[in-house]
Image (cartoon, rainbow, N blue to C red; front, side):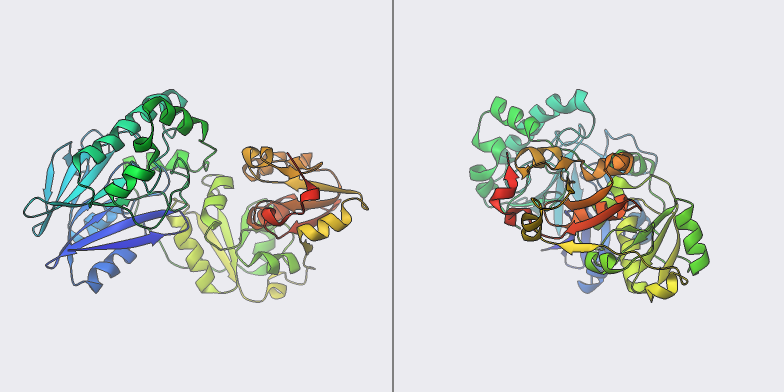
Length: 448
């Protein structure tokens, strides 16, 4: 029996392909199902079952399309109200894949209807468990995605679900969570790439402390999560449309400028330093990296048309794949190649890139504003003296609050700051991007 991990690092999630003797089951597939199909083909396995642990809040599922494409049985919790045909399963139900079994276990907490699936041999021995957003590696799934009115109830439920998993499964059982590898669906950062039930007994807060402490600490530690989460559950419950991963139509320089001037979403995917060195006035800089889709989805005006600027078609296609995973499908154009040519003769904008050392050298000798675009809790834990704090997700609505003059923008690593720099850019403002790790900021700069 083989368990293949399919990583989606941009969202901090994992999907799984379980295969044996030419048959396979898939748990929690992402929307770009070609990766799953390739993994199955590499193992010469036919996918007969597709299972969801829950109605996902952080990505658009590929489960429905995958099941339709390969003719597999699509398995979703009976308690979930969905707009498509599926095999409805409840606690204790067994999915017989032939050379192995998957047994549903009701593990509420991340959602009310959440299921885990215990992987068993034909003889009945438990060898793994797919825990979705329940037991993660050294933590648990967050419990506030259904609204504040449900958070405390779900937090108590999460405690008991993790305890049930530990009580009913042997120490050697492998734990295969969907979330917890950078996902905002995790209540706190997860630890390690693999784990077992036995290891979780010593590291998981739901197993190492009492219920009241676990619940209070979980709720106290819940920070903000991306705004696009509000749309994912609705799309997934209704049944997502088939994915489109084709190249968006090319846009000429005149049309590109018209779209920028009209206030449309025109996103430059190039490296943050390349963007700083030269970019189209009015374009938004979202470097295509592991954080790209989370922060673009967080700021994006849902349903608005979007045009992508990239170095080449490969970069645009990669971005389209990332965006499809969160349901951003309205890509109305693309532009690639030489940036000066795309500008159509219009001068390119640019701004300085600096470090915290540079800021330390200049902060007492220049009239400048420091803009910190980290989350409020990050700012509260320590910040540059005199810095104003506008968290990146709030910046589009609050950019007029940024004063004229020289503005140095920073975050924790430089990525969020690079997006912010492109958002606040205007004629009466000189942007300086601090592309540096906040941990390296000189102590004399930091207060709090």
